[in-house]
Structure formats: structure tokens, C-alpha cells
Picture 1: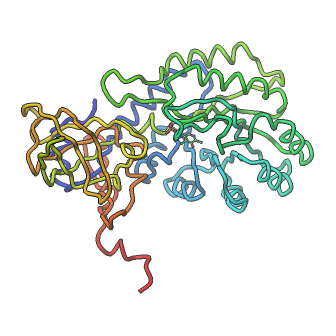
Picture 2 (picture 1 turned 90 degrees about the vertical axis):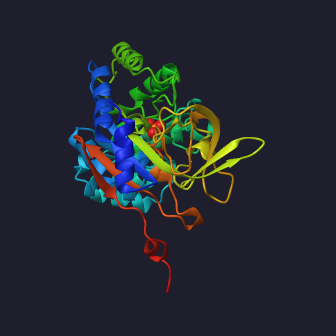
Picture 3 (picture 1 turned 180 degrees about the horizontal axis):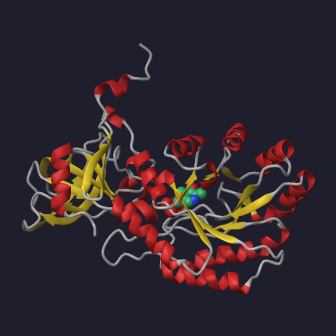
Length: 400
Ligand SMILES: *Cc1c(COP(=O)(O)O)cnc(C)c1O
């Protein structure tokens, strides 16, 4: 059950706006959906925490039995801080200095390496002593748009599969223990066949890695942003994955566990951004509703042309009118153009749905505005999990 408008209104009134509100129950339900769908396959899920890293979210993820995938050494440290065991943390690196890989090794976490040069350095330093994964670039176009597509043949991510010979030469020269093969083709992948294509690419490569224990298919499950919006058919995907692995027994005899790294799927629908309308401005082109937020708090509409459903919490039964909802940043800052909403009055609270993933996480202090507060609702109780910035936060790292 999503949070009701009444609950959101109550919380936003108590904690002030703009505020991010997260529903822990939704995260649990999404995780259960995955577990149920993949019940027939030996599967492990690592939450791609770059979507939302508040440590209270991480703790909830850990409590429901999900593991965690990190995109930086600081995310690794946040996960450790939140209580994850090193063996349940995966660091899928991209373009990082080798020293970060050394640090991850010292911390004892799982590592996916994404360049030949780091793989060589790793081999020279650790040889067979520390198991490691390889991030491959499968040369497949996947994902909602080019900005979130990561597996195609011009993408910076992973080692291109056409360089398999070079990978194998390094593995052999340094007796590397390759435990995992990883691909992640992008975000907003609604087409299950993209995953199947990725699996097909992997099946050609698996026989070369005799010590392999897992195959990591990344994240990128699409969630619906509005009524009728397509989403990744998780059940069909699970069926396809089960069939594919049944048809391709590992020639090396070892059982392969299947890993996924869902980010958006777990937290997108769990998050709500509630804002207050500062000004109404009628113009010949449209009626603007200007809110006390902007792309400094939720960049997805401006950055990805993403659609976020909006509702007027303060006037849920008001007559429908057309508005353009805009932010207060001194740059074009449009959340929605010509959107039908219940009549808006200045002071009304508007909620943006699907704000859990890449919302707060991509926020900034642009225009020297404060970042919003974050509130978590768990077992019916709301509590503050990050206070709103205060003026001192803007100055705290600047020389006196
Ligand atoms: C971002 C990312 C994910 C998660 O993508 P979603 O679209 O949020 O599911 C998974 N794996 C890696 C390596 C990523 O960089």
C-alpha cells in the first residue's frame, strides 16, 4: 500500500517542505516481488545503492536480507557503516584509480574490475589470492535512452567482450581467480530480451573461466512512472533466466549463482518529494505554479526528460486545470509542462511521485539553496533521517 495523500500531507506539515519521504514497506514489497519471481533460480540481489544512500535506507535494505552494490569506495564505507558484512558488499568499479581497488580489497569486499589496466595491476599484486569479478561490455544497446545506456559499443563501461583474448592473457599470466562475470546494460530496460541477449553473450564467455561462481546481470529494471507506463516484466525475466541456465549447463561443472543489482526497482516508488507552491503566474502560454524546490532537488525531469506524476495534496478534489510546474532555480527548471492538476492555490503542497531513486541522491546546493530533509516511514512511524541543510552547511568547507 503506497502512503496516502493524508499521510504525506501530515508528514510534510510536521517536517516542513521541501521534504523527501520514503516508505520502507514499499522497498520490502519490491524485494519480495523479486525473491518470489526468481524463486526457481539460485539468485542473489545487490541493491545498487547509488540510487539512494541514506544509511537508514541501507539498514532497512540489510534488514530485509538484500545485499548491496556500490559505485564508489565511499559507498562501500557507507554500507559498512550501515552494518553490511564485507562479503555482502559488491564494488562495481568504473574508471577508478587502482588505489581504490586496493582499499576495497583491504576492506574485504567483492570487486568487479572494469578495465584491462586495473585487472593487470590486480593480477600483479594479488595473483590468485583474492577472488575478483570482471565487468564486461557486451556491446548491446539497452536502456531507456542514451544517457542511461551503458552496454553499447561506444560505452565507457566495462571491458569490451571483443577483448576477451587480452582478458584471458592476463588471467593466465597472473593466475587470476575470476569468480564473477558482470554486465549492466543500462537503466529503464523494459525489454526482457535485452537481458536475454546479455545472457547469450555471457554463455559464450563462461567456458573460459573455470573457477567462475556467479554471473552478474546488473540492474536496470524499469518501473512505471504513470498509468499505463511499461515496466520490466520481472516474472517473464525470471522465467527466461531459468530457461537459459537450464539450457546452458556450465561446461566447467560448477554451479553458477545469478546476481542482479536493482537500484531504481527497489526505491523509486518508495520516495515522494513534497514541495509548497510559492507563486502562481498566469501567462499567455501557460499558468505557472512555482514551487519551493527545483532541479537542485530533483534533476530527473531536466536531465533525463523524466516524467514524474504530481498531485495537489492540499486540494485533492479541486477542479482540474492545466499548469506548468516549475522550480525556483535561476535557469529553466521545468518539472512538468501543461499538466492537468486539481486547482492550485499559493501555499498548496504538491507531491512528486517516484522520487526515491536518483532524487535526493543527485541533489545539490545550486543557487545556494538548502538540500531537503529526508523522512523515513517504517511500521507506520515517520522519523527524520536527515535534517534539512542550515546556512552553516553552505560555509562549512570554505576557508575562513
Ligand atoms: C546504476 C547501476 C545499477 C542500477 O541501475 P538501476 O537502473 O537503478 O536499476 C546497477 N548496476 C550498476 C553497475 C550500476 O552502475
